[in-house]
Amino acid sequence: MSHPLATYSFLPWLRQGLANQIQSADFDAAVKLRVQVDVQLELRAEKLADGQQTKPINRPVALYGPGDIQGIESRAIVRVEPRNWITNFEPNYLPLVEFYDEDFPWRYTPAAPDTAKGRLRPWIMLLVLEEPKEEESPEFIEGQNIRDKPLPYINVPDIDVFPPAEQLWAWAHVHVNRSLAANDDEFTSTNMAAVIPRLRTVLNQNPDLAYSRIVSPRKLDENAGYHAFLVPVFETGRLAGLGLDPAASPSATFSAWAEYPSRTNFPGVLNALNGWER
Image (cartoon, rainbow, N blue to C red; front, side, top):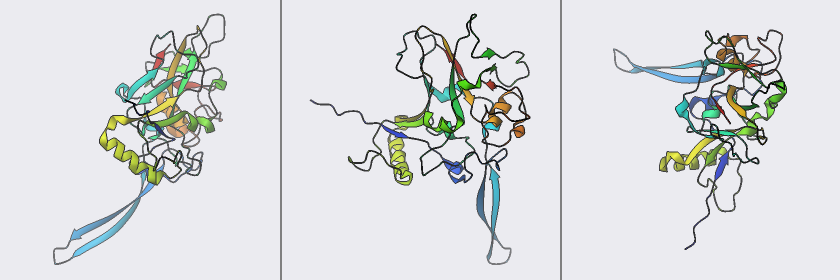
């Protein structure tokens, strides 16, 4: 008896709830701390006399962003590769972390997706750095005096270890263990309005059939030790993780490893939201 081949689908990003109403573009310097969406309500009241009275209300509502987050619940993570202390990780594979919630990597991104290109920067990235060696300049240094810090942190002397901010969209996606195609001839689709209902149908059948993944662009060398960190992509998140004021960031989508005149601890102090070692 023949067995059908496994079918997988991938989405470049996913949003739920009010986040789908975000209109501000990525790298929009006008958004300073939190992105806002317009919420429209209609209040209805019963008069003491007969009849009803209605009143429309429009209000801008600020959404939580990276500057409001100081950690990740470890149970949100369902898989990491390589696992801690693994010594036989395949050299042609890339490190990754997977989350149970399909929208998690983009949940707090204070920007709208580029629907024409199918791109949206995640609010966190997976940073993999080589274990410090005595005879070489270290790629990172463990932060000291963390008593008054919300999280442990690392010093990164060389910002060249970070990928360009505008390329981060390529290192996160949603993995679905089912086909989301309209028919057997459809291999790709840019119509998210048609794809999302199919995803919802899959998740209603089994919520474990889809998850999100962040991949590190770093290829690991043989016989080398590494540390992996989930770090904030936006400067507001970096400042919050260091116990500093997120409002000091030039904008809500300003890169966490870009320089600006009032930056604290440049060339790079980033808080580690989660980490493991190889």
